[in-house]
Amino acid sequence: MRKAANHKENELPSFDRYYIELAEAVSRRANCLGKKVGAIVVVGNRIVSTGYNGVPEGMTNCMDGGCKVCYEKKKAREKNKQDNAKKNGSGKSYDDCICVHAEQNVMMTAARFGISIESGVLYTTFQPCFGCAKQMLQAKIQKIVFQKDFIPPSELWDEYQEIQDKFPGGVWKFENGGSIEMLSKKRGAIEHVSGQTLVVVKGNGAAVR
Figure 1 (tube, one colour):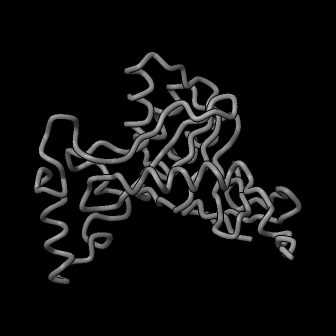
Figure 2: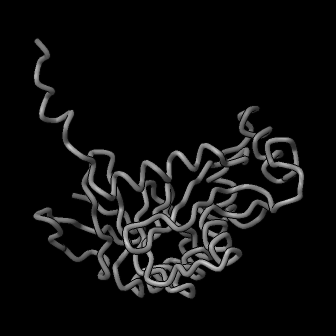
């Protein structure tokens, strides 16, 4: 006789988990020697666009040596001669190569095919950089859900925080355990989201339970 399936096996994933895991799947297509990032845009609970990071179309792929900056960084990491974060400063190396970010690609792909992403939710495996956050705001993205933290350069922190605060639906971090936490609009303030107490640490934007 067939045993009844465990209750947990029958539990459906939340939509946030579902979409973040799809963004993770998209990231596996990323052709970059650095971070592999995937992003999707959801409008009306339907995926309307996907994107991952890599060189512009028609150029030699990053993993084939098309991006000299990423290639040099990879060589340096392999030789353990430099710590990329210490040399460049956190987040400063995001925009010094020819690779297009996943968030840029997901928005431009939608534009290319005439798909509106206004009021959409953007799911991404990495918290958007300063430039991508600006572009999302301009594209009328309503909400951001990310998985891994990005800490902007200290001199851009206030501006970056101001941009994040402008998204009507907020900027949320998806934790591996399945919880989702909203970054506070007031650094250092305590917020209660879905029954959890969240503290946003001054200076780095990381949500802490």
